Length: 287
Image (cartoon, rainbow, N blue to C red; front, side):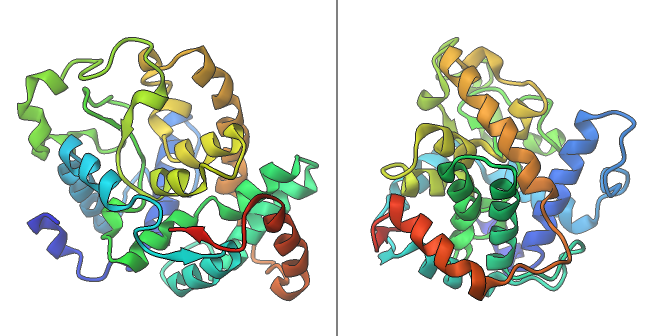
């Protein structure tokens, strides 16, 4: 871990609030004149510090190392509901939107998708989409868990929030990484791109054997706001990516707008979701 990560002595602090503000900032940038919780007007110092650390430390070499460190199975085995209960330790009293537990937030997302009549795999994707945040309980600092995601190994789009903080990233001094395609090629497809490390990328690799490709795209790219909101990085996509991104955009409103003060009844909903989980996942999966 880099020396800068020592600044974040509590990896759980403000995690959910930072994630909320990330979403709000991206929404405000994408829709001029639209005010969504007005975080873009004057973001808290903690948000700017989060993105300073994220944009400074998310280098190509860092991502390649994390992809090897967190191969599924490196941190044991757990069932999906067991992982949800484990993640429940991340209740954050500083979240300005809600004091819901992690399980309640996941259930709210899934229930909103279910109420709109979407397929069962879509509902399940909503249930598990944030389980990658379990990285915090594996000791990862929050700048390597949440926040907008983006490709590494090529030039950073100006659609990435707090783009100016990339001036501190060592990859800026590697000319081969500072062209639009960098180490990739035009239209190579996102399957060949290394994304910045975080809960999206981690859960994608964990869930890859079990969910349909549409759900995996939702998981892997739901924080890729520069692409699905800012229309950046289209030159790296192929037609398959563009088709699958329709599902990412369909999922995003449920993640962003599903929070409600009405708490889902976990006890009543658990049997339905345990049965749904069992249709796609074995009793234990590798983490």
